Length: 218
Image 1 (cartoon, helix red, strand yellow):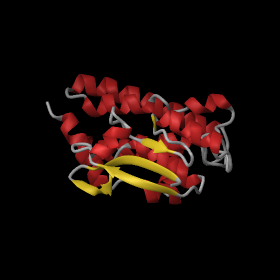
Image 2 (cartoon, helix red, strand yellow):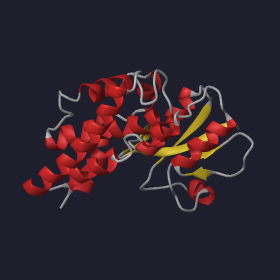
Image 3 (cartoon, helix red, strand yellow):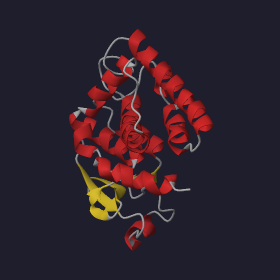
């Protein structure tokens, strides 16, 4: 059967790729490694029986590799197994300490997106800016277009979908964008979003917005 991957379908459009950043991370990994795979789009509000029978917890994404009967959940574990099983081309982030660069951005982004009053808005915006400035500084002081140099690696494929959600959701709901002064982050996002693998695996912006809207209701 080859590699099979179950990912989230778009809200209200079960035949269209959904907005899950963790699903996209796995698809990006498969694309960058040029591995053939079969995609199953899962409607999260009406999960099919066959999917729940192989994955009772119903989590996404899940992957089944060539000769393995088991479906594996959790994007961290999935990309680790893919790297072990298909080491070429390598997507290992080196040096290893670079693997955590930008890891707090997603939490700070969600806090800012969900903040309702001006005081919390200011605090949460500052927390997000602190994280983005740290990323900007890393990119400025380490050569190359990506976190670990000239070649894309696992850390970039983890950050790309999160930065896409950040740009799309904050732009729509708060009319906010990454400040012009953070030129390295802005350039980095352009590079990530122009990757062929990213173009192929991204959700349309309207589905990203639609998925965040219910989470922001009071």
